Amino acid sequence: MVRSSRKLRRLVVGDETFLWSVGHHHHTDRGRYHDCREVLTIRRSGAPGRLLVVFRAGPDRLVPDGLLPSGAVGTSAGSWLNLHEPGTVRALLDEAVSRGWHPDNPPTEQLDGWELFARAVQPQKRSGRC
Image 1 (cartoon, rainbow, N blue to C red):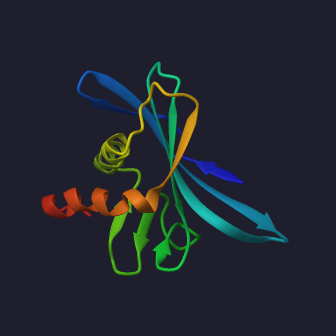
Image 2 (image 1 turned 180 degrees about the vertical axis):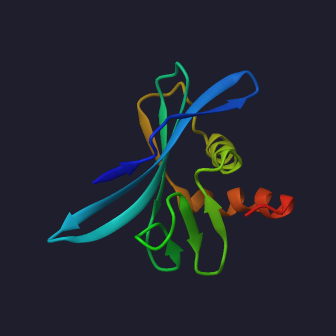
């Protein structure tokens, strides 16, 4: 099952425009949800490549599961990101690019969001946003 934000949003970086959305995915078995994850999808307008930044629930890793609002991902230590915030999307995009993702490389590339999480939280802590 997939629950996505309703509209594709725009993020302008220099003279490039990226399109992004946030979705919640999980499996259902006999009325119970499992394997909950938030997925941030990013692509550059007109480019063939697409990036999926996936945050899976796990020990000390929190994603919306009925208690948290859409887009909230965090750790039990108290660090949080809101995937609906353009600044968060930009920080995750910058980190993905620094690790080699390029929008001109098709098809879809999937990255573990938790591997990008700490670097994306840092700019927000410095600016006082969370």
